[in-house]
Length: 94
Image (cartoon, rainbow, N blue to C red; front, top):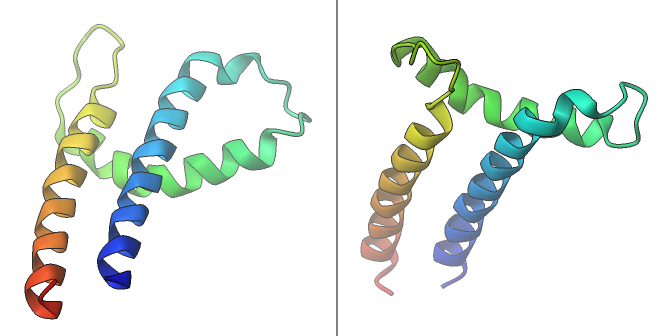
C-alpha cells in the first residue's frame, strides 16, 4: 500500500537525518562557514531541532557534556512509527 510505504519512508528519512545530525555534532565545527555544505547543515538542523529541542528541555543534563536527546528521539520515533503504521494498516486493511 502506497500510504503505508510513504509513512515508512518518512520515518526512515527522519532516522537518517538524526544520524547525520549526530555526525555533524562531532565534525560540524570543522566545516568552514562558507562551505557548500552549509545549506545541507542548516536543513538537517532545521528539520531535527523541532524533535530534539523539546526532548532536551525535558531530559536532565548528563553532566558529562553528552547529548542523549538523539537516543531518546530514536526511541520515541520508533514507537510513533509503529503506532502510525498499525493505524494505517488497520484503516486501509493491508
